[in-house]
Length: 91
Image (cartoon, rainbow, N blue to C red; front, side, top):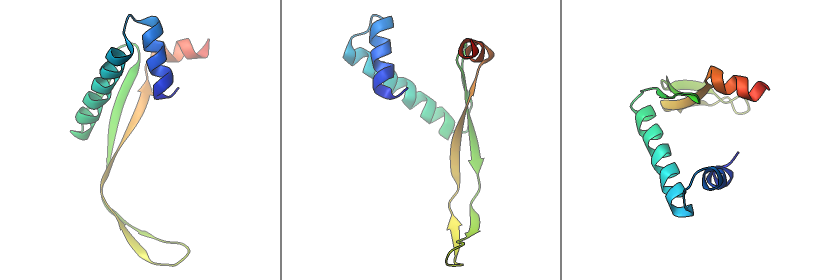
């Protein structure tokens, strides 16, 4: 599901107008992004949790040229679905 499909589902299932659904989604994504950048887990009951994983900088070797490169530190967010969501998807 992409952002446009999610917005259309919010319009259909909720009583939101197009602009209100778009603002709601933007606010939710902003809050998740902000909390994950602070290395906090975001849990949504019945849906799942967004868990940030922090990776330190690392030196890697380019296989084709043999040059060493420095990868900067990064934060990757992993989504872990809740048991309720997994049961609904398995049906």
